[in-house]
Length: 231
Image (cartoon, rainbow, N blue to C red; front, side):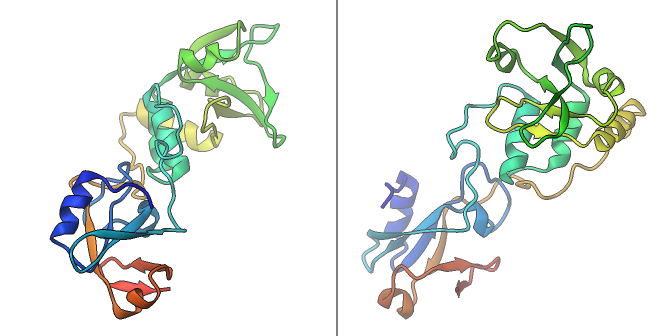
C-alpha cells in the first residue's frame, strides 16, 4: 500500500468507512477528477484509519509520475502534457509556432532530412540546448519555426525533440495554419481536452458499501456526481 500523504491521513480521521482518492498533481480541473487522473484510492475503517489501497487500472500517469525530466521550455512542457493526456495537442501547435528551434544542418547547409524509426520522412528540431547537446558536436542553426516549415523538403514533417522522453511528429498542414493565424494576429482555440481550470478539491471521498467490505479489492470507479459505480 502506498504511503498516504499527510492531507489524506488528516481527512481520513473525519471520514470513516470511505474510499479516499487524490488526483495526480498534474490534473487541476474543477469538481470530481476524471477516472484516468486518479492513481487509486485509500480505504478507511470505522475509526478513520487507512486500512487498504486499490489501484486504478485506468489511470494515465502524468509526466512527473512517469519520472520524466522536468520540461526545459514551454514547447517541451506542452508536448509532455499532450502525449500523457494532461493537456491539449493544440497547445503544442500554439507554443511551437511562436518558437525558435535548433535544426541540424546537412553538408549543403540545409536542414538535415532523416527518417523516424517508423519510416516517416522528418526534419528533427530541438526546443532547448539540452536536447541538442545530448547528440554531441553536430552542426545546427537556430531558426524560427515558421522559417523551418517554409523550407521543409516535400513530404517531410517536423520531429520535435526526438531524443526527449516525449517526442512528437507534427502535422505540417496544421502547424502551417497555426503559424499563419499568429501572423494575422488571430487567437485560435487550443482545445478542451486538457486539465481544465484550477482550484480542484484534492481529496474525494466515497462511502464504503457492504459489497466493499466483502470484497475490498473489487474494481470500482466513481462517476462525475461522486456516486460509486461497480465495474
